[in-house]
Amino acid sequence: MKCNERNCLWCAWRAATGPVDDPTLCCGHTSHQVRNSFAGYTTAENCKAYLRDDPGLKIKVKRDTREMLMKGIHQKVVDNGQFQSAEAILDYFSPDTYDSPKEITCDDFDVVTEVQFGGSEGIYLDCYAEGRIQPECEKKRWHLGTYKTLETSLSAMQTLGALGGALTYFASEYLWENGERFLSNRDLRIRALQKRQKEEEAEKS
Image 1 (tube, rainbow, N blue to C red):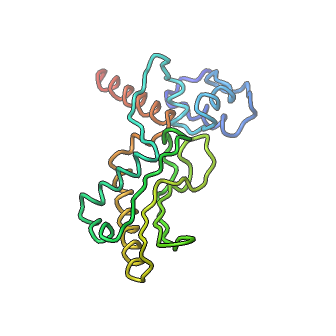
Image 2: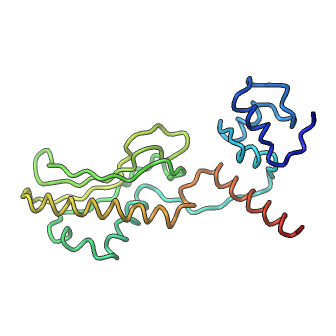
Image 3: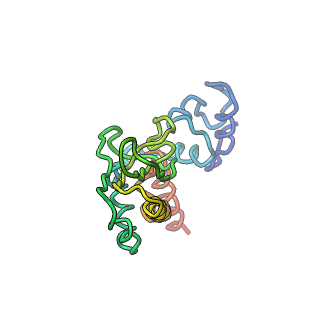
């Protein structure tokens, strides 16, 4: 039976459960085609976007590197008055400048902080993106930056602990406010296609 359903739930279901090249897909797309178009993802929404894809559609988005993400979160902490106490005892703040991977193109991570004594001196507050920062990357802790104090007192440990809490809080806010920067290219494309479809349907109504 020929598929006339715009959302093509049947196609998505068969792509997720059927053989690699199931000839019974009623819309004419093989499971292999659907999987390859969206990096192995086979939900109904992804299938819907695939069926209405347009090779001429260009997606542009500003991306963050790990350094930019760390600086953006740090600035929110500063702007909200949560940095003064730590600043008074800090030796340095160092955002990560590693080049690989160059940009963050996936939002499958959480920002976490860890306070611990240094190997030879002082106390360190390290910040990480825990999870996946690119669709093809492995899940692990990706270093974002370090705060260090030469002090070793309980109060210094508590001060950096409080800074870690503020960083975690404002990281969530930063990611929420700039969410599009961290969506994968696939998700950005789906969003753009769905937006265009809604606009087309509105024009017809």
